[in-house]
Length: 424
Length: 112
Image (tube, rainbow over the protein chains, first blue to last red):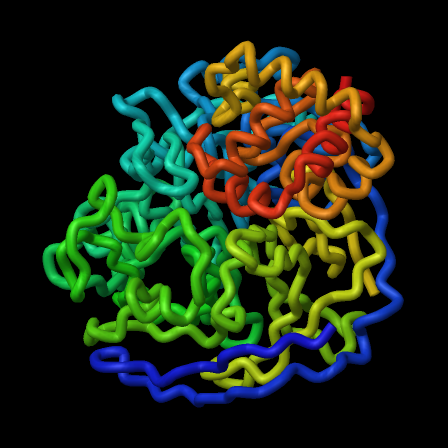
């Protein structure tokens, strides 16, 4: 299926890098057929993320269960369980799930073979009223246990109480993807927790992308506005669940889940503002339910997505340091959940393109849109030049995680409980 | 414990006896095959092909037809049930009485 997209807009103010405005239609891609799928795991409880070692050993998280590893033989070892679980080598009773929150991202240290370190993003009750944390642990030699837990980030907000919003239960909007960038620092994506002032706050870590070292310290070259927490690389985000790094330039690119409109892909700029500001009584808006304007106007009603965007933009251009998206999903919100770059000649013209997993929403007349899109950028990532829906040999579903493995294959997790390995 | 909490999130309102009686009547008239087709259009995306639920969307395994009917009628009437009501109210808006009866019959028959 061909997909049209809104194209990139110009960057503004301090960011200052001009981008192209391309309103165009994606063309058919020669790789859109003949994909092959192997079923890796089934029957999982909301698998959220994977980290794949070069041996094929695959660590994975389940949102309400915990961290496990699938060995190349197919055997699964359950490593770290959350509260209330059984059958894990160890259990951390402070780790819990609620609504959208729970155990989410997982990544291996770039020097895993030497230091055996693994990192996990999870919701924890250790600090009231609960926070999201980044845990660092050591995997033993035979991949049967983890130990030496150190929480290197402890203060990412968690939403503890229900509010008057769609998806308004506790645990909303946690972000939760963690990845190492090409320079060896850890990037952490977070969500706004339905907090109206959180994304533009310089101290609250919700609605941000963090860049830290493996002890949780800020990268020395992070350049957020004066007075901001130094761990912040970018701010003003809604709920970033996808981050990946362009293989050629090393640039960080995020895929962000829009409100009732405008999923976005954005190339990050150090210190930049994603432009999400759902605070009440600002930018022409008045009071909002539970002091959060993110789904306004008419938060429980379907309406024209462009009218909604004009009222409550995903990227508000009133900010001088705003980073404009390079893709906006034609103004739809269908749930961009993850991102990865394809690499290797086996992908043909898709070598170097980004893939985005889309979960599907279906609210108010929006096409559900569960799919994986292949996003091709121009050389300097200032614009998207082609978008193709991947023709898949597996049923569609809520594509929560896409991860490129060391073998060049694309590993795909669906909320329904499966992980597949895809290759052309 | 958390698995239970996740499964139940957003799934409950008080069920009145009158609604139950009506639901049982509707369920008896439900067409399981027609319900399967309707389920595959939308419901499967979040509740799964076995009604197991996923992410923050609750499982519906073990729910009888009366329960399903009452919930769908509540959503169709645009009454809040739980945190995912926005989606359910949107999807239930176009359901006919027959659609609801068919879905209830299918879910009771296949997910119990």
